[in-house]
Amino acid sequence: MPLFEEVLSQQPYPCFKLVSVPALLQSRLKKGMLCLYNIDRHLFEFPTVGQFDHAEKLFSHLDFVGYYSIAEFKDLVFAEQLPVSCPSCKGPAKDAGMIYRFKDVRITYKEPNKMRMDVATDGAKGTFIINGSIQIVSVPKLGLKTRRDFGASPGKRKSLMDVGLISEFYLSYTTARYMRDGSIDGVPVALFQMTYKDKDEDYSHHIVYVDPKTKVVRKRESYSQEGKLQAIYYFNDVKEIRPGVWFPTTIEARTADNKVAGITSYREIRVNTDVSEDRFKL
Image 1 (cartoon, rainbow, N blue to C red):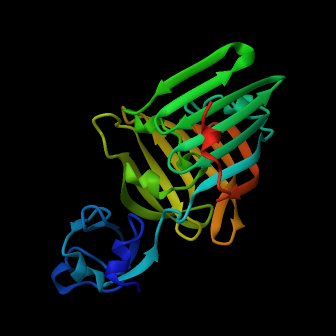
Image 2 (cartoon, rainbow, N blue to C red):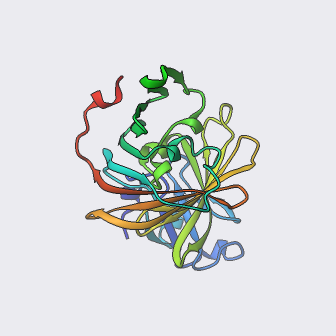
């Protein structure tokens, strides 16, 4: 069991299991319950039960389970991304974008919040860049070049969440509420509701199912500003791409009525290759 001070110095939202119940809380808590420690608010959060302060006293009754975000992450490169053959696909989910229209997609991601996507199909090439809150899209053959600023809409930014990972940077502008534990295809997961800290600008949210062993999001439900389910994503075929770093190599997108919208596979995945900042300029 790590020291309390060590937990405070690590990633947001470490998870614990209650191994014994303090006498004063026996009417509210049960042995075996899971909870999160909210580092910002200095509280332990139990789903359906509530929040508890005096964290130092409760800490001695808990067993450390792990963190749900990946550590020491700098950058991620997909050498190639190919849509998988899917005869039953009904077209991309509403927020899956144009990605399923392209035969060759190469992605580079760098913390914090930088992404470059180079795409090609039928002789046309295009570049999609996110750098902070700025989005640039360029397709020369179509005479298209746009620049937009999503600074006030955090839900429209691209992040590692799109490929099934939760980074420390993502947690810096979101709030996680632990809901319960469950399973996906027999794999134990924890369910979290992810909302944005600046709710004045973005009321959308996600329900994510995270495998604590691999730190991979196995399923994500995306909800609109009005709270309506927009799309469901399954992150499958999880592989260890380097010691201690796991990654889903197949992503299946489904519509709100649970119809398959698209299936994409990833390969030649590399992490922490010191990607140049120049990759995110156009």
